[in-house]
Image 1 (cartoon, rainbow, N blue to C red):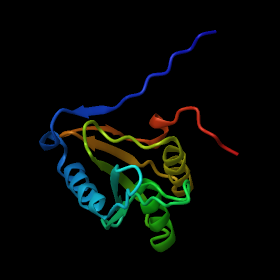
Image 2: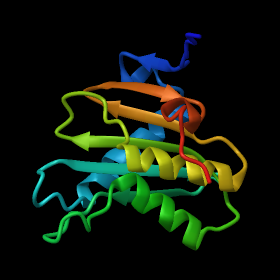
Image 3: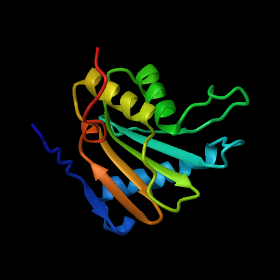
Length: 151
């Protein structure tokens, strides 16, 4: 039996169209990408999360000579949030990249970790994926990984 899967998302053709909180978080992600260390790929990624308390945290990708020992921006900020701000759930996560020829989307490993964090905290994470002056948003990490791994 064939089944169909629909994924709802919001698309903004200009960052100025974003709701204020989302636009602020994209700007924070753009600030974070300046801290990236993309020595080998030349692709900087910055991520910013807003916690339930309103606190904003930054993360950036960091590459290593002993590939694959680097870490993506999304995972770096989420692991930091869980380690240092346990009990203060992640409400939203924005990502930005340089170069920014298109919107920046999380890799498969990051999608799984974002969903893991969402499950542990018991509340959805809003994902704002920005680039080239546009953004797409999903209100729940499950939208990016509908057939997820789960123990």
